Length: 492
Image (tube, rainbow, N blue to C red; front, side):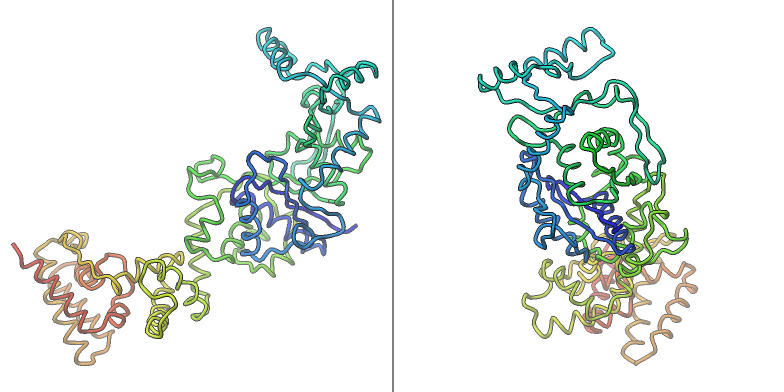
């Protein structure tokens, strides 16, 4: 049996971490088993549908390097792969269920349904939901409704007795009483639009899906879907409901934890290989210790057995660490290309790049590579090269444990040591030793000397390494900035 899995998002919002993890698990499972990864667009919710969301779906998968074997754009033998282009199929299969007595026409108006709901609430009835008013209409009654021009919905005839069980690869057998399943849910609306349940089951069957890997929030829908498969007489695919993605506070990951849209991570400067690697580890592991995987490695080693049952935590700091590691593995030429858009957007370099800009970016790459967590970090790390905004608050120059008097002395004497050493061609390591000796002479910590010098040169407490900053800035400009800082501390 060929493994066939699908990612079937609704284009009603941007691709988020939880959804993309579902896509990655399906993709890697298909690749590791020599199967097919199908992309299906479930766009029946026309009120919330947006072209932007559809474009974001395609561009996100493309950015991550995830190619689908069948689906929109690429086609395939079981298309179309966009649900809004399959409405005739859904109507056909809903009508088949009616013919088999497994579903029926319902002509109840919204007003009647609301009145039934109110009565059930007021009477605190144990039975809540549709009262099956139209479940046993005669042919003549149906014809009369149709003659009046009333368009029906089609409802599934759910058994009122017994239980329905489906097997989940992770969770085991899941059983629900039929009476607790949504009472006779609508399959086809009066306007011909299918509900999620009908379209989902029909498409999975016709597209020969063998394994359904989706979020655990869909577990309650499992029994209903199994009842639909049984009503049609179709084989039920294997289910694997994936663990929830949580924030560090134990709540489902959402915007309150930070950005969840992949597009936002991309804009901030996360690399696709870092996102792909880390997100795959959110709820899956190979051996409990290996952390770094290339896409090619995951395409070979991903197994369903490695998926965790318990909820998985998405750690933004861990992602930052992963991204930093991948940045440091980057080839300098590629990294120069990656950071250029951020420098252009900040107005630091021209677009298109001049030769001078290209040379400067090439010089920037080695020192920033060791400092960046995300690509956009290049802007604050290098701003001192492009915009000279001196720090005028003396407190910023003063390191923890030092004071204004010692900071002034460290700045004046340290500047003299630094500039003399640079002009005389002294080794950087020796200059550093001299500055450490100065801290001992003044009786302060080493950072009490280096911080005021760094702030004077880079206008920031967070910057590139000191000597890298000086090389990029030039000795003359370095001296100008040091003297300016000295004057600040000489003012009363």
